[in-house]
Length: 82
Ligand SMILES: [Zn+2]
Image 1 (cartoon, rainbow, N blue to C red):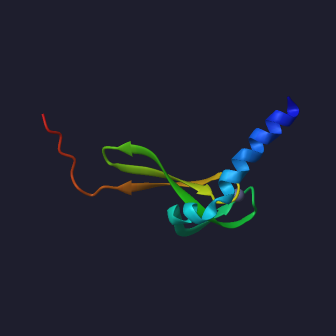
Image 2 (cartoon, rainbow, N blue to C red):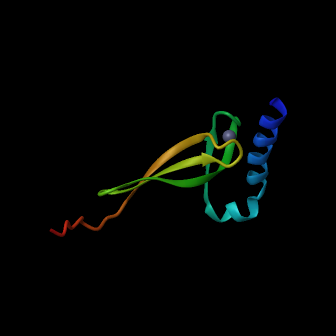
């Protein structure tokens, strides 16, 4: 049982090692990660789509800890078509 579980966890890590593809999603921004205790490259993830804009979450590229969120305002007024 234990062995199965660790194999599963290892599979997750393998995905992370496929970084060349993931790098495209990386923001240029570096944020401080409290878990890594250093400034880390972050991965931007769309969290919520709201009428006033998109909310993004920044994840640490190494441990995937949430290091910040950002609201991208659409700027354009919201037109509700009835
Ligand atoms: Zn981290």
